[in-house]
Image (spheres, rainbow, N blue to C red):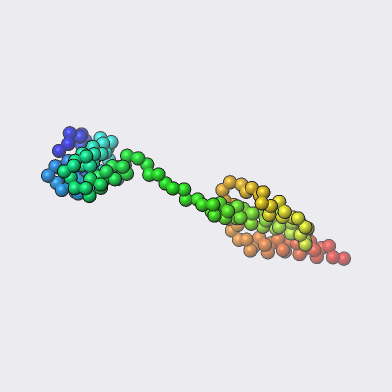
Length: 166
């Protein structure tokens, strides 16, 4: 067994460490034991021992290529962060801009209607429909009940229109 201090480790960690360092155990099982030590919380010295074991396996030319590949890939997995590809596409950005545009158009239209301005004047939305429109960062807030907002705006506009009648 390894010279790693096992104070404060669980029986599972001790067993995985024993399997991993047993030169008579099948290589596949030693790799799996190392993965069990690296994939979950373990003392730093145990994790170092697991990494050293993997290096010993993938450096050994006598070990089969399949096991060497598994050991080197597992070693890479735990020695460096995974490089993630960008998941936001140009289409996603166009959708985000359109969501903001719709949100701002709705709010402005609702506000004008609430103020009793109907029909809407020409150009009321020209800045928002412009190709130069730059939305704020992030996504617009979600309107919990857009239909209720529309109804409230219509009702306010109708009240003002009725009040203006002679």
